[in-house]
Length: 538
Image (tube, rainbow, N blue to C red):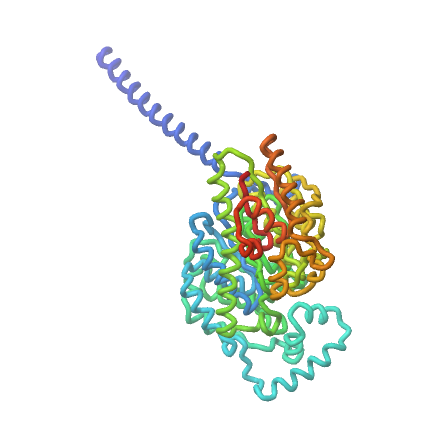
């Protein structure tokens, strides 16, 4: 071969190889850049301890996990919450759902994505279908039932007594009579099999977990990922997750025995853990009672609790009446919307003020007290928070921690209901707190402990120089609160400090009047809900 021609061919091959190498290099660079970007966008966490072989890396996922608690017939409340969540789709992107007991059923409904069909299904779940027992005559049921209840009150057995406290004397009495569960599952099976929920969950792309209580040995919660399962498997798991001991028979899956996933002896009634393990760190958690849940300090939690109890064992857990369903759906919607408005609506308001100069102040009223529930005037009487009141304060702490607030210090009334509210907020947010005597509630003298909505008291509140026989006048209250606000205004304008005041309804009226012109009627009628936050700009 001619030497010149050979050199030309070699040169051509060289150029070809060079071109391919450049293309390959480009592909490699693009791949590396993509991987770097993915790594930058993802947050990782290692689960496990020490050098354990069980340690695994989890990618922290975007979006929210929805957690639905258990509680039998009270579960229609969660349909109302779902309705409210639909109005906040632009800020709450639910990517996964988890539930126990009736919460597992509602989780499956949510994964199907059809709120209207889910609502209709709850109206189909009537007492006569769910609470069916063909072996017992309705006329004779009450007689033997009452006799068993009388006998149960004398039984010295801590397990039975605990069950009585948890699910009610009525339910335990029924279960003592019927060994395998007082009611059959035929009604729920019929509803499930004639609805699209089983195939819908099976085909869903959304992670959907149901928690059951494995009672083989020590009772242990067991999580099932329903998405992708066969419809028949999903049905058995949903039946197992809602198999309330005594009320319904135990379910067997693959030769393993299961009871209700939220049962108080070993269960997990509000199963956050499976979604946490999957990598979610933002949650909407729906409770059907006031029971505490595990804390997850590295997670953002929006807790929704019933503002009014949803009923006990008979009038709540075992109430599947259309009237009960309608009432609880409405309450779920209202409660959820109140929380979401406070959480996201206020955050939007804060964002609107971010670029504005000037000092600002936040005010919140303490959490719910016993006398709030009983509609009594608290005044200067030192009243403790209810369980819900503590939850409201903790929830507000989470909102402040994760909602974009800039608060430098918490000032609180020394009365216990305000100091406990402030403590919860401070512990969760890390914001320092100190007592401020001038935030103490007005003393209403003879009216303390009386009905808040009484006509005589309503009239008395418009008499600003009335001591209420041993109390404090509105004018004196105004003097101390206005003096405090004048001081905070001067300090805020000087050093840029932003305060959160934790106090009372009477104090809220005074603060509102400091910033806003009001008529006497508007002043007397003004109020702030428990743990509601109001922002003021000096």
